[in-house]
Image (tube, rainbow, N blue to C red):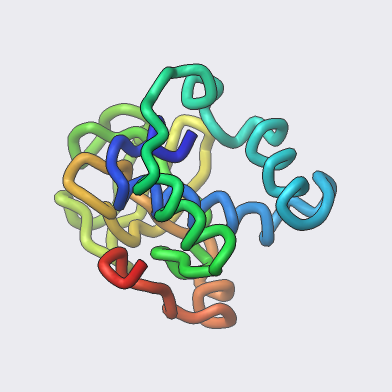
Length: 154
């Protein structure tokens, strides 16, 4: 699912990091541990259903990367990152309906709104082909902090 959402190993690491973040932030009703995370990803409705059904090769390297993130806790996004959207061109496109601030997006400055009315601050594109990732709460950013791993350190 992570590779289907983002299309690259680095993107898959970011997607797996987002899954873990969202599960910790709002997935308590789906159970605990690994099974709770699986339940959340499959049943919460947050992730695109097509990402579960598209065939994509699951390489040993992909398994290693996702294991590093989900089992070893080496997230490539800080724990407060809780949004991403399909957005093929920075600005109003794909799932993004409006942008306040700089385009192309600038981390911690550009504010995006998606078609589900979520308003969030841009954090990064893990790769040039990835979705924009961001966060909805400055309080969470302050509380959780910016610590995360670089993809190269997985």
